[in-house]
Image (cartoon, rainbow, N blue to C red; front, side, top):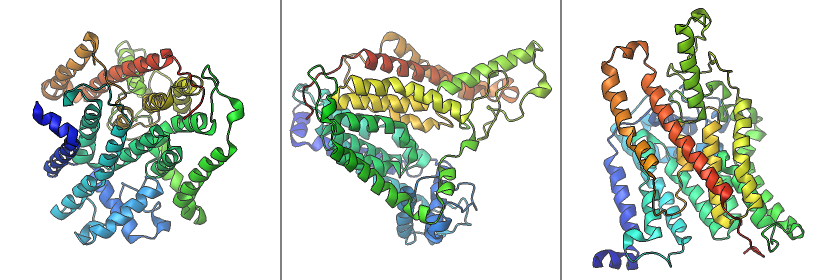
Length: 469
């Protein structure tokens, strides 16, 4: 065991982890990629060839630009490197173009931008107290955190097989979290503001940032019992935070405000006409709701309680991204999902304000905001679960027997859906069953995890401090 200890002392294990996962990413270059590969190629073409006034109007391809302006500028910068690799990838009308050079360029652009993610993980490791760590490398919290983040198989699959740029965006969020742990609140706020203008899905966790910064930065002291000392409020700090958010937003949205195009930009960022669920149901509350509606409709038709001619034509199990009406249960509107989401995150935000637990309390609230938004949000993509899988602490016993049994059940479920179902007579009559079973099974597990985490947060005692650091 001498070698691991030497590597630990020299800090070489982090470099080895980072290099190892980078080599794995390189091996994944020739693998399958999804339509998101064409999405980002099209965005390279749009930002390279068109003036900014047309970025959010261009619709030659169905994959229109629907990320905030900072990401559009990111694509613009990439396009000026791409032109030296393969000019044809920047042709707007060259739909579904994928030459070997284009493939290499786009894959390596994701790998290269992951440098920010690696740096952010390194900064997060600095926030861990390693004094109580075990002697062995595998027992050290910093090593465990690095493995869980750098070798996050969710990110590897989504970014380096499916194809997206979540790594460097996740890096921005981790870096902002690290800065808050380090009491560098202004930097943390700035990084998060920048992140929001790269990808607006991070609005899910904005309540956690807003309440924590107000509670821990704008109020400079607590009473001995941990409650807030109201006369410690700093107007200067509030104005400073507001100025940071305003300047970042002005830099991002200012050009489109000057062009009178903000409504067009927001219509692309928030496309409510896409329907309650993505084509592949995210395993959340609405997957359970949809499944219940489907079961009730089948029972209703069997018992002749429903008129087949009155069943909505747009089906939630059709595999298409569209609006649809539920058959038996009340149909869900965007406003209803917003109300459900706000109700779901309120307890965590309440705890962050009235039961302050420092940066760790903020991290729990952030995860609960992300998970609650995933559970009840409108048109949630299944990949959004990546926001809620930040490791929080080391547990002696990771799973109990029930949780282990549930996870082992994923194996038989996969075998049933992928290898057994295609050979049954139900394949043509009920093609939605594999999707329904997978989404519902995973939704049960995620709902359980959400509930268990909430119980942990609500029952955790507050940390009383006489003065904030």
